[in-house]
Length: 325
Length: 295
Image 1 (tube, rainbow over the protein chains, first blue to last red):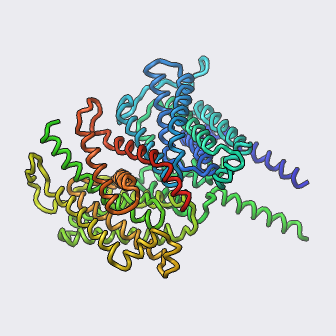
Image 2: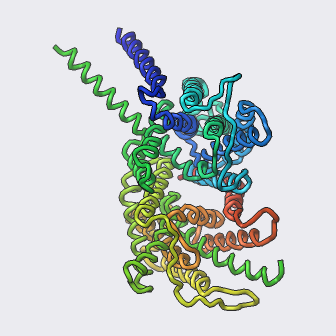
């Protein structure tokens, strides 16, 4: 009885949230937030990849912005300069970024903890410098990247692009959720718990780490390509080392081991950055720094997860009080 | 590259290398005592440099006291960071500690950006600005200050670690915190001293380098990364090894940038340092991951 009630309740919440998501870009609802919502969707995709890597597998990456950047640049260069179809260039970008992550993954994941963190940070710095030096337009970036289109339908307004981005974002979230609940997900958690134990029961630790690293790179690449094709202007500054840190902030707020928390993390940071603190100089990184320290020290499971727990406790108490008399 | 040019690049490599060594010393001290990589190390360097400028130009304090005050403030901030951010996170995992020190780093950087704005600052040279000619190369007096300060810091640090009670206790903690605790050394107090000492040395680095390369609130990150490379070449073992690592890195980067690579301009300096870092880490990965598993 309780389970069925809970099930119904869950479907109701999901339906309401979906309806809310669909209605957001309409002008009479929350239309003015469409562009921010697009960024939230893109960053959610990158953050989910990091959550799989950091929260589930326990491996740090301080270089996720690098993959976001290669995705954007490869897609932009192919479609604008080589005249390749934007969808195809997006696909090629994802494949190339994934292959890059695969090749770099094996040597890098022989490292652990602190050294892994620094190695990925170094990787991010190298890619950032290469984008700035070799990318068309140098530090100023490139403009005039073609929009995505299906048949004659061009994604040329933020209203249309909102649905495109959130389609991809929800797809990435669902895929990740399935991975987490599958055999692979259990293997990842085993690796997080103890690599030696995981290995002893036949889990190929290195292979799983690299696989998840590649997946997170592909997510980031897709997000980058989507960014390139809708901003129609990109510059290396959007993919620097600080962006990798901001992605960590999003994951920490959402809860490192929480797929759906990624939306919450991305939303918190994007609203802070583009709405509340717009024009307030460096206050945004002061707040990110505080969030990173406070959340990691006092609620290591993440702000979103902690709030959800508190809500669960409150509901339980409420239900008990109702049942008593 | 002519012989004169070679000497010139060698000199500038030694100068930059000394700075990297000073920053790397901070990483080494904290890592040895606490097994934490302090991602905020570069921010102490930035703080040292920026503080010295504002104490001299805005507060009008004479040069020498201003420099000392800058270093002391940096050390105090290091101690505060340990007390509030690191010690409160008891039994945190390696990943959590990485995230906490990154948080501290961007917090310090953000406060500096808010307080001081985004412009580059350049404090006055310690002594004169007339270059000295040596073996066909020109050395700026400030470069001599940088190299000299590094030497003095390393020698003092070595004496401190070898001949004082506190220094020996720090060393004991680096070898085994548990065993050190058994003989009555408080590992937490040692960690506090390590953070303050590392921040002070970072501050010294910032103070001596700021006159030759102007600084802004953003520079801490890059400098910290270079210092980390220096420390990892030295293997996070001893101060001397770190200094050798820093000087090697400085010279390699300086020569690599000096050689005419065609399109490869000096913009690739940091990329070269990062490649060195990745190579070293990957080559040593077997030993490093064994080390991480132990701790």
